[in-house]
Structure formats: structure tokens, C-alpha cells
Image 1 (cartoon, rainbow, N blue to C red):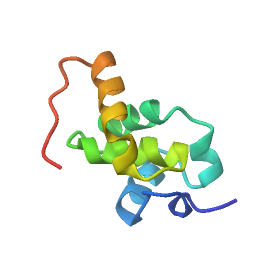
Image 2: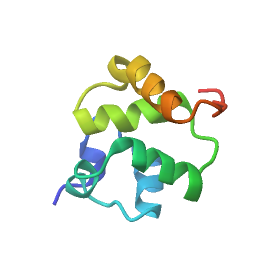
Image 3: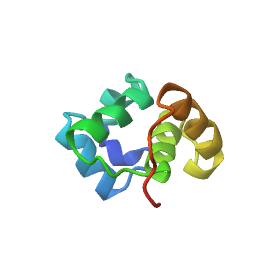
Image 4: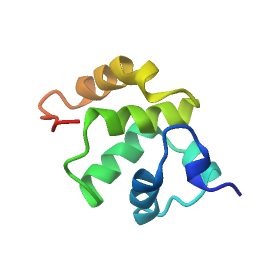
Length: 89
């Protein structure tokens, strides 16, 4: 199994947060919906996560750079959570 930090956009900080919700490997991460992962992180680890963190997680699931998926990721999240207030990136 590969460490989750081997995926694009996943550095030590996000890796540490993912570890807190039981995700330790890239394989464990890749079988999950990235939006569900982000929501779990918001609820259980860090309620201040920003759009950049969302894009990092979605991008990692697609193996793409975070800035390439930012608009789509935020739009998809906001459609499901229209009242969510983003913190600063």
C-alpha cells in the first residue's frame, strides 16, 4: 500500500487530517467519494477547511492538480451545501 501523500495535492497537513479519519493509504482514499471525505473532515477534524482543501482532495481523487478542478469541485459542493460559508484559503 502507498502512503496517501503519494497522491497529487496531498501534503503532510492534509495527510495528517486524513489519518485522523482512518485513511492511511492512497488505496483507501481512492475508493471513497472525495466529497464525502471532505465532509467527514469538516465534521470530525477541521470545520475551517477552505475551497483549496476541497480542490486538493477532489484533485487527488482524479490524480490532477488542485487548481485544475477548483471551480468544478466548489460548484459541486455548493450545490449540495448551498448555505455553507467558506473560510479564507
